[in-house]
Image (cartoon, rainbow, N blue to C red; front, side, top):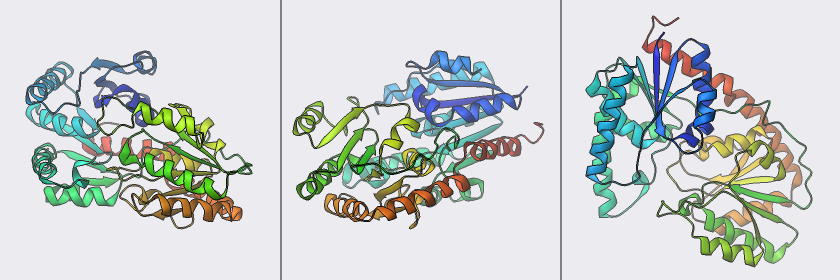
Length: 375
């Protein structure tokens, strides 16, 4: 039995974005381990057959903490002796890739689910961080038997400039997939028109632009309903503040629904899904989920976001532009036939590209290519 080790920053992200791949690997005969920061998903992971190793990964860039995390990774890899290490999210890709090379793991999969803010920030400090991060990517993507999964072409081009030999080891998988039987299409005939944004409540996700656009639209059309789904993240300096949420609630322009883990139930409550992000996205899952539910999309002409839509399924707007967002919203609600047409095209796009069966099958093929003796 071949051993597969996932290394992921936190358990809830793995459950949301990679659990079906792990379950399929178990069905294919792999012994599957996961090293991650454990919150409240331990029972769920173990019920699905994974062997869980608690790994404390911090957001701090402290050199002492990074050395401690690297040592923990080396210890876990030595104890498990995996045949394949599958790295997901930025810090596991960087530190885990380096640890896998030091440990001489036979095969490595590095999943680049977005580059974060460092590759899209300006200023001297950001430039220094970019250079240091680029060095870490160069080291972590240098395993001789490695596949690198990208979710959009821009991320692939950026990292292949850092390490040119990564190009021939790369594969493009558009997102983490959805269960198309769970994310079903419910007729889009909501009255009043309902505009929803669902995301982590970070400034670079475009939350403030969404709030401002809702105010602009309501000046001329108070019948439109706006919903914000997501939670604050007090450990992230980009997080929206609790005081801002309280103010928005008191103003009554936007409904605040908080965190939800049942987006297949949430999205059908919307006529249009918006994501005005300028974050370093991979391929935002909410846009895939919106397509699967047959919902029109408005998002930014930004790496990752623009890769999740076509002219038939949604509208692209400039980043950091609440006026453009409000105009796009008003354009669609004044032309409801466009909303229906885009939703239908979105579902067709999801069926072509985003099924979880297709995503899992591609991952199994990657594992088999790295370890061809695995049946």
